[in-house]
Length: 360
Image (cartoon, rainbow, N blue to C red; front, side):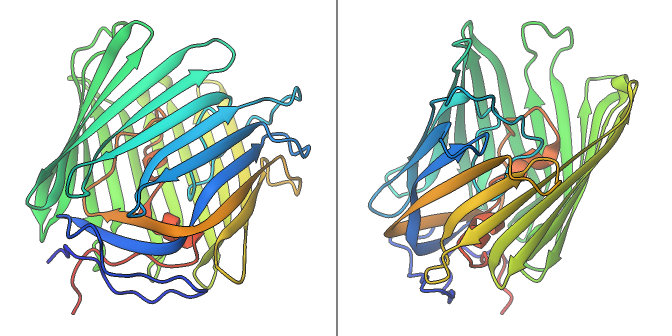
């Protein structure tokens, strides 16, 4: 049976949790920490001069309400990153101004978000508006609208299906055609399996253009107890004969995330290709909060980019959803949707995510 309450969990390194000040939310577990990120600087060429700054805003209950990213550019060519961290937001096009606003209803339930990205060079922008709809199990659908300079160009509807003990075993995506698409609606189904704590272990997804599956994605999440040990993703795009294997391995010191190791091997009409990257995290041993991360873009021992965090004391509320797997901002592969997974958000602050099911 799914849990609809905030769990009492004991965290190391001076981190604590209290009973929710927001009340129960269907299909959501809440963790309340006493430290949070106030701001972060991003140095995309590791020359000591930041290329961008992220500022974080919260309400009195510790809910994240806004993220602002301002790209400043120091005049030095930025690193073209092969891989972005999975535990903290770094906009997928880092040379942009980025704003995300998260909204909540009167009862404190998350009900949507709006993302605006403006490219610093061309002035092009993209707005993404997402709205969450609740059922008895929690969030049972998401409607996302995407806008550009010409207006609305695509709507994505996500529906959660086949609930077992409050957890969905299937996700359906419906995409309206973009103005330049010849096809009609695109349908995509993702089938899930879960472990005994309700966390996703496998996912298989196909994008159906009405005749043949155009894109096929599958991934396996391996875990060591409540921590993610690795993602293994296979991505196929049949029209281009693309076949890619992505692997991300995670390392921890107790509950603290210390390393992400990424490797991709692929084949296409153009031949074989590979990508690698390593991200190392450093924490404050007194509080368990992140100090900085370093990105080694080709796993060759050099630091190509760095992100430094300014931490403040104040409530920080992390939501762990039974259903939420928002439409991804990147085109593919699927595991980009897991960038901000609850488990990695917890590990960034040296703690573990709560179970989604009662195991008592």
